[in-house]
Length: 357
Ligand SMILES: [Mn+2]
Image (cartoon, rainbow, N blue to C red; front, side, top):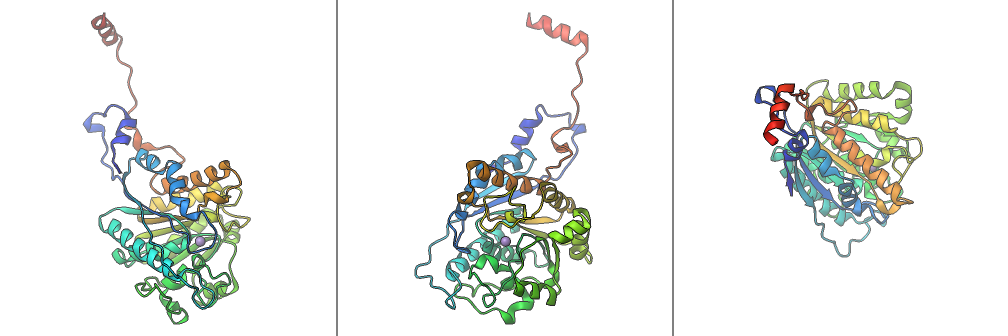
């Protein structure tokens, strides 16, 4: 299904006179569902794409004037006998294969000129989305919004879950510390430490902290947000990523970056997260750069909400972030309105009345 600008035109009502229509660049957005859950052990995160779609994602994007190309949900084949790697790492072949499939899809979408939105699924899928994006945009910068750093290596992880490790595979500097996993031979590291900025961290493992410090990776923890304010944090984020040149941005957004009171339906909630306003500000500022090229929205898990209300709140928060990335503003959607209607003169309405009689 492909929704185009028609919905937006519908909302706008009758077309304004041609001279008043301002030329504007409509976002062309590809939507890829990645119902993948093998990067962790809880059930339900594979229902994330359906849940976020049901919260009205397509309609919201179309209403903003985006051209939406829905690639549907990817099919991930089960890998039989996907045994633990090193007696610890769960489902390496499944994660490797699914990420490979996703990388191809994201690469195709970006090559076709779309901004690509990937709906997860767990965060291990960033292995695929970032790799596929980097195939087309080798100089991309990554903004990783998350409570967790997701940069354990297979040798430092405590849980064995690959959704806590994707960045270790993607970072060039870490490759002598990362073993070759079965199913991962296709994967080539595509990021340098200076290409990443984290926002929202508040649950970082000791080995992860070591990596952040020793490889000089930029991060803004919740404490930094308290200290600086979100406006300074975003300013410094772009200073780090765009200082030398403009570059495509990959936003990898884990819904658990938000406070659990706002986003309860997720696998690893941590107290003290982003407020709604901080989350929207992050997305608004990223939109304002004009450089957003791909978005991941991950870890929405409808089976972990205590009620339907909790699930709905979490999913609509995900939709708000994505819509804001593509132009929704808290100041009103200026794009949907070109001209105020003018009352017709009394003469005209009189004559119309007469015609009807
Ligand atoms: Mn994450």
